[in-house]
Length: 302
Image (cartoon, rainbow, N blue to C red):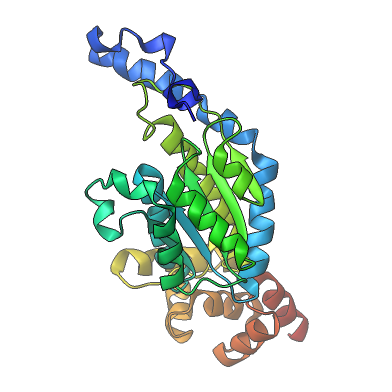
């Protein structure tokens, strides 16, 4: 592929003078470009939804979500994965991020690592990739060999594969079952794909992981009901969530939190159903972890 011809590498005619304008004008030019990102993501909504449907069903069967990428794209995958455990109370291996070059590449660029497709195969074998898993390849340029190698290996063992790129007719699209192409266009600084392309990839990853966690029973209404109260801030957040979900005051919410063994889901079911912690646990088990269904059952029992 001739990189000079793909959308993320073309010069932006609206920022040709960005090197000799005021700081405010720099901000304005970048901001105008950033306004285009959400609209570009919206054009790929059907494909993003398809990824959520497939990945979430595999999660319920015991599978995982694994992002793979290099450079900025790889870091974004690792970032999204690392935010799932504290936000939704899932294990650190349910959503994972693999970056070409390993952990050191998170902090210091290892650009050459992206050119080795076999490296991705090795990385996926190390985590024992299986057919229940979902592998999502991230590459702004849409042509990273590391990502291609990983997607091909994942498909060969029956895993579900998806790709996220920021160019038209991306090479990686042909190696994935579901391809997302978010065309963000030329960057304010030519080729600096950590800008619009990076933001677009982060938005798509947010949608995928959030959608999957909703389907996985980690959200009640629009509240994070599996938040882990591991520090003072999160204890306060847990109390507010319980209060908002049940309609009780904050003092009662913290009482429910303690009586539930600091399990926000159980506390909400206790408060909404006016039942004990043991009864709430039984309702949640029967509802397969779905708080809404557990509350309905608890109220019917009452």
